[in-house]
Length: 202
Image (cartoon, rainbow, N blue to C red; front, side, top):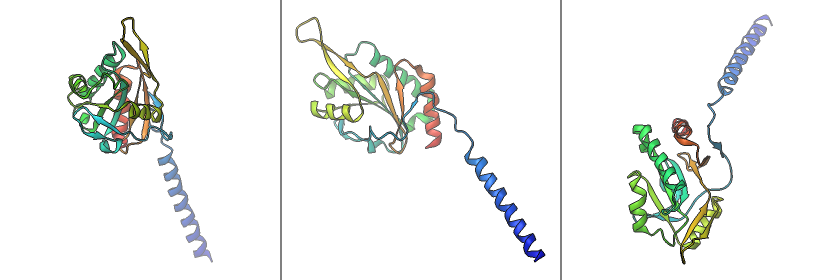
């Protein structure tokens, strides 16, 4: 009886140590994202568009890479070129890790943003960037899936217009799951910080 008690005590002690180790390991806090965490939200799951080389694209094509996805248009006077410029800076700052990141620019102005125009505009910021476009119906479907607002705003000249649109970027992890919303005007530091976290986690 005495031997059994000692064995039981030893077993209980070992089990409690293992449990304690497990608790301390899993309770270590992860470094928080600096942008809006969208992990687990049930939208922005996929798209069906064409890239500026003429190749049909969907989100699964980029599995294995962290994806930044921005909606805009080539004639945007400020927000779009600024955002793409910031993304290009981040890619440079990532160094070799940039090969694990894909930037996608989705036009909300398919009427004017043709394949040749996107092929000229988007890679001018970084040769690795891809411009995506679709028909009016495809653009509308993608905007609804990604909860992106866009609308024509008539200009002063006849037939001219600009586009109002959601000025934010989505970030997906290497498994193609939505993880972050990067709002306009956040700068490069927070984007670089969060991309490095996702690259380390994936």
